[in-house]
Every structure is written in C-alpha cells, then in structure tokens.
Length: 349
Image (cartoon, rainbow, N blue to C red; front, side):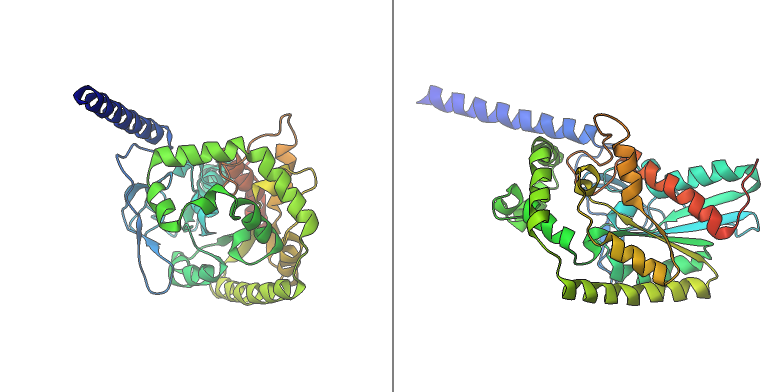
C-alpha cells in the first residue's frame, strides 16, 4: 500500500513538472518578451468595451502588449507637428492591434516603415496604432472623436473585420467552429477563459485547429452551399454601417483628414478554391456610394497565397482570423500607395 502510494505520488510529481516545463516552453515560443504568467492589459471605461492600461507591459492571450502613455500599442507616439511630418492613425480591432504577432510586425508599424522608405529623409512618418482587441465598428467613431483627432492626422485608416457586424459568412463560421459538436462547445465560457491564460493550452488549441484545418475548410464550403443570406438582415446591417461611416467621414472632414477603409478576410475566404464572398461586395459598394477609398484585402491575400505551391500561409498558426507577419506585410503594401495617392504626395527619387 505504501509502495503504491509512493508510486502514485511520484507519478503526480513527474506529471506536474512536465506540465510546468511544457508551459514554460510554450511561453518562450510565443512572440515577445517572456512573462511567467498572463496579466490583463485592459481597464474598464464607460464609453468603450475597455481600453489599454497606460504603460502596460504584459502578456495576454498569446500577444505581448507594449502600451504607451496614451494607451496605444507601440513606441511612444510623439509627433512634432512640423510641416514635413506625415501623421497616420490606424483604428480597428484585433486585426489592427496585431493579435499574435510582435508589435514590429503589425500592419501600422510595417506601413510606417514602407512610407518612410518611399518618402525618404525629407519627410518624417508617424503611424499611431489605436487598434484594440474586441472593438467593433460601433466603437471606431468614438475612438476617432475622443482620441485620434487630437493628433491632427493627415490620414485615418479604419480596418474593419467580418465579425464587426452580422453577415452570412459570420453565421457559417459560427456553425463550423462554434457548433454543438466542436471543441469550443465542450468547454464552458468560464473554463475557456481560465484555460486561455495558459500558454500550453493556447498551443494545444492551435495545434488542434491546425490538425483539423482542411476538414474545417471543407465544412465551411459545404455550409456556404446550403446557407443563404438574409436580405433583411443585410439591409439593416448596411444601414447601421452607413450611419457609422457617415460619422467617420464627417469627423475626418472636420479635421481635414483623408479616410481610408479596408475589410480583413477570414482564412477560409483566402484558401478555398471558390471563396465564400461574404459581405465584401456590399461593403465595397457602400464605400463607393460615400466616395470613401476602400482597399480590397481579399483579392490581395488570395493573389499572394495562390502565387506558390503549397499556398503561402498568411494567418497566425491555429488562428482563422488574424494575419501573421507576412499577412500584415500584404496589408501595409496595399495601403502605402493609397495613402500617398490620397495626399497627392510625391515620392522621393
């Protein structure tokens, strides 16, 4: 009996040490400086879902947060407002914040580097990343009005995501990845929240999705063939987005800033032979009706992915929504010419 107890205790100790070692290895593998544990970088406010804690240096849900004194991701934003300075503001959700990648690999930072390279030493480029995980289109007007306009931006870039508003593709995604037979459905919300603080769990979750990636993409395709769009819902959605867009346009006009928009694609749209179109065409038409510059990221992502065999991977491992560093490079490359054209800027020779 004593021997059996000792063996059980030894097994438990070894298992615990292996789990601790696995957790440490998983944390080292995630981008950014090592942290022993996750610590929320957010604080509550009245007018938004949450904001970043100022000066936060924390790891949370697989990302390392480097927050400046304004509550924005990246190095301290210190414009001098000189005549030779070009100021760009990026507004959006986790796809603008850059979930899962280093701060230097986010599209706002890559855009800043590309603009600086194109303009040369005669201009100073500053790009502020005001993206926050969990924001949606209804929050972008608030961010622009209460935070961004104080920077006197020349250009405001708003990065929309498909989960910002109801649409057919979002319904398909929910059915495939959050249905009753999925891993997501087997765990309660509170348990997922607690487990999500463990880097080892995040690695296992990503590995699970990677293993089932091809199967899930096939399911998306099958659902797309069966599910039809709700025209009443689509009309109501576009009506709400029109109101938000009109507010964004008015605010930018009041500050003499140029407005650019884009719509991030889901991974399934990029890699399926017949992509699920989603609300892209209606969204593009809405921008055209309002004479707002719109960048078609789906076309850019599909062109890059299909240019090689096997197709280039453009999303974070085990993640169906957030681009990786290469994907964000595509975003920056698609934007740089649009920013310069919007301002009528002549590039350095």
